[in-house]
Image (cartoon, rainbow, N blue to C red):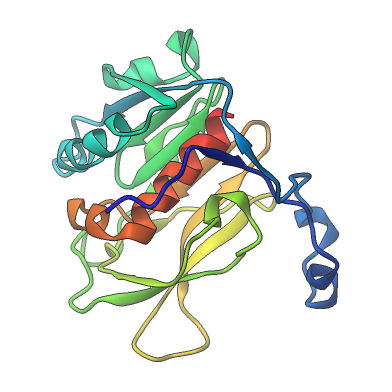
Length: 219
């Protein structure tokens, strides 16, 4: 199921955000006004041949992208996603030990973003609640809590300038958990998530998350 709409959404900090303690450094200059998308977002999609699950995730995402009238996409070799060969596209979606949506000009090494947990990259035995941590962020537009089996891998590091977007919580716990997605605008827009199972693409909120990330990074 795909709940996306052909609308470019932006977000402006609401006064209530100040009252609940959203830091000024997290203020994103977007406005909550809807308007027709005028420009096509050109997307390059690649999977890391070293990750045996990556091509399955790309195969799950491709038909979703193909249904979006304002997205044009192409598949490419793994290294072609990055800065040196990113001519003619607005963002790259890289399936490599997670999913990474990178604006034009962002170069990165997946191994520098992800690291395996103690029991490898196996999924959690039971589903965990995936909860928005920064609902005001454009990537979380129209995203509610959903369930997923996050892999045991973790982020090697989250930059100080980044914003944690999604937290995985065990059972009914209201506190604690760990970040499974974050976004950054320094130096260019990038989104990273640990969630990458083809089953995740059966979750409407996850589908919307990925489309939001593509529009945000490629816009």
